[in-house]
Length: 435
Image (tube, rainbow, N blue to C red; front, side):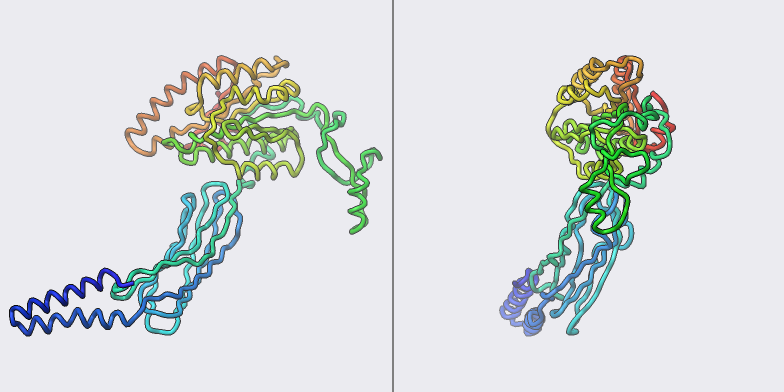
């Protein structure tokens, strides 16, 4: 446990002593005793070894952009020396107030108590483990090796999409998104066999729709009206969203947090159509072939947000063409509105065009145009902020993409370009430039 400084003091004593001995210089011999006595008395003291750490969090789950307050209490029982206590935060956590580390000096007093607190903001959704609080103890003279430890208090934190940011999509009509023509008459259509929700009985409901089991359970606790099963109405419009979850969307230059913008766009669009009484389904291509079955209920919004909050990117390459083939039976049956959320900068052109043509071949209602809308998330604003060469590269990439966009529009497909560095998704959908 002896540190490097102790060895240096010992060699200093030996060197000065031998030099004074051979030169017959008593002053050098006396001076050589200084490092020896320093090492002897310094080794009599130990640095702190018993450090207890307690950490408190204001909450275990929060939304993207939310602030988390962390408080750390420290208790040091024995020893003397400097103690550094710190929290290693995940990369997407940003300290907005205070500091996530503290340096304290433990004197010869019997016990020392200290504390510090800070606030962090999470910029990315997902599930994270906040590592245990770590501490480092140092000898006051550096004569002994450092002692490392932790508080064994790691905590899991869940970060979800912010529902409050989606509320602007609830009561307004989007300018750039296609409006379902059956949106207003879906409430008066004939009930289908697709289950929607359970609600209270109202005058005019059929006795056949009463859910007797659910009613019996409810009557055990409180006397209330019966509960009835509510089913989807025929004629309800279906919206199908293809979301690109390629690993390239978060590993390439200029795409820092770009996948988060894609998830935000998909959640916002789904939230909009669900509140317009539409059935919304989703397929995650390049992302493990995940399917979110189309349905509508009041609970569906939170379920969808929770699933998107836990969505991760995949290295698997599937392509839009294979995604359309996998969903073709459903698409032919329902003829939905198509929303493709991706970044054309990272799409395989051949696969993407093939997927668009496959969708067009499934269209039976030629009067409804445009049936396909591509929400194109662009990285050029982020690249332009990084430097001179990045700005030139962004210009060249934009020119390259414009040729692809022109070819896509010739197929009768609408493109909504969204640059998160310069625009908000709400402004783009409700009042942005229509392509």
